[in-house]
Length: 481
Ligand code: SAH
Ligand code: F3S
Image (cartoon, rainbow, N blue to C red; front, side, top):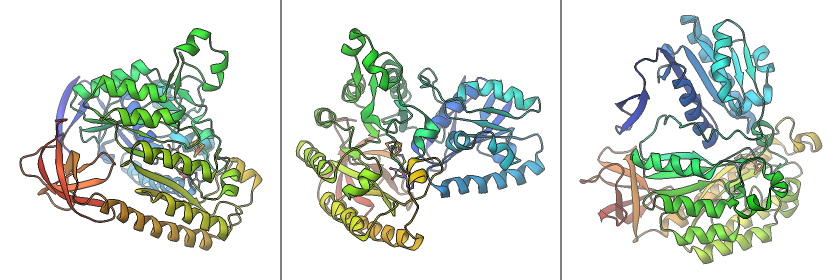
């Protein structure tokens, strides 16, 4: 395969895999979580072997794939709107085929074909290796569906084609599926049971990325702290593994250590941590290795014990505080971020106040906040009435967003005057005279370019901030460079 260097929108050079002998064009669009973006890179890799090059121009596509999200109703509506656009393009380009991938494909299955006439193919998250067969079906004029969920598929043997990459940061998936069954969440239904990927394949992917010039990776999973490798299979079957398999099993803190040691100059991040599965040894491993970033995305969803229980989040507010205290003690400058849901069924004003007071305690660096959206098939949808009026959900959401904004500013102000290591990712959106990168805590840092380059690790003195961005001036290369 030949590598062609193209200019990305940010002006950085990125390598796209183009094979001269490939004759068809794939246009792939992703919605939702990072895992979907990572999955699309797996799909592009599988299809590269089937004669497809990726294109960024919808009009020249032979095959359009949309990797969909079901997490909230709005995410699904966005995809449906997008399908209307594809319909318009298909009128000009009748041979164009359209496939839906991901969570909506899994949730709606063949119903999708009836509901959206434009769709030729429906493929669930565990069925991407079947794409060559499915594409043959649609080439022959038939619709194709594969939504079978797997107990062992991790795509560990597929080398992803990096799409829309800045050439510096990349995602590496380590688990698939989720066994947690939070009552509001559709993911366990659309992505199936939890599986961990072979650590050797994770390490070799990271080594390859380093060779290609990547400087930072994010280990991805719905619930990374639950990672457990004992030779393959579902986590729930661990008890029936042999004594040898159990004794040599690799958990998340061990995997973190292995990745940190494999590439000591590679920055390592991970997402997402569920508080109920995060253990002290993970925090201690983070503290032990300077290349593991000081940032934990630790969704809590609600500050009310009653609501946490109704959500089937298996920890209390008090246990969450204990975890926060442990993180602050072991890694004093660790950034912490949240996901929150407002207006879960039966949520009272008092429950909402508990959320606000929990936020006051933690003072999160960042946050991702949502109004509850009932998802068909979930336990909450089956057992609880979606009884909080939209206006109340929205008002509570605005209140927590405003509070988060204050806390974000409080946190960015703590960086003022410090000198921090920043990995340059690209040109600042606001000015082409400035670089944009991130510090260990994942906060965006903007500073004048001088003679530095994308991919450099630079020590930056922080001189100013907004609630979302740090501004500063470079003082030289960091020791990691
Ligand atoms: N473990 C996952 C979380 C998946 S969903 C991860 O890796 O990110 C991301 C967030 O979406 C959740 O933390 C939750 O805050 C939100 N979310 C999930 N289901 C939702 C629903 N039904 N309504 C509103 N928000 C939801
Ligand atoms: Fe969803 Fe809870 Fe898993 S939010 S992805 S069921 S940890």
